[in-house]
Length: 243
Image 1 (spheres, rainbow, N blue to C red):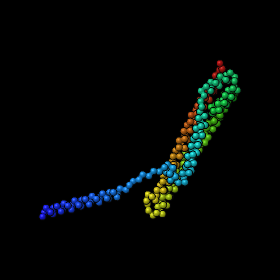
Image 2: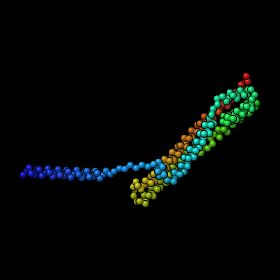
Image 3: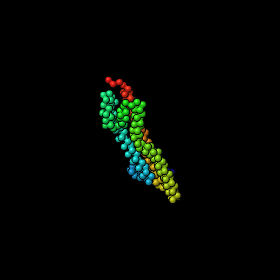
């Protein structure tokens, strides 16, 4: 009798364990939904920034245009001719002033334009020659700096546009919450996208314009120092006696 009771108890225990295992397996299966990967293109991500992305796109286009245009101008202006001053020296000491002026005009660089002002005033006091070359050099540098202030302005206002987009995104979030009467990720996702995308866009455009502005200015400063050295060599050459 005792053996029968023990066998029945063991059978019931095994059946209960099997039932629990089946229930746990069912719960785990139900609790693990299939995860699907969702991909989003860069264009779709930018579009989620809303209307504020249009002025940011325009600012980006203007920044790239100014960068390319100024790079082309600076590349042409930075052409260096180490034989320029020696050639001018030979022409001047031989009395070929008109040929020296023509050579400066044909080179058509800021450096040659400055030297042209000095060559055309040979015979006048050195101080007057220096003043004329200083004015010409300053004028040529001003031409090289054309439109650089546009990059400076874009670098300052682009993050502000991004901040405006952030504020609009926050307003959209609270508006959608007030309509839905609940806080769910699906409800606030539109505003969050606009908030984050516009902030990132404004910072990217602003940093790009800021870096380009200072990089181009550094190149202009380098050229300006080279022009100063060329001016000093030219003035020293005028004081040298003709051989």
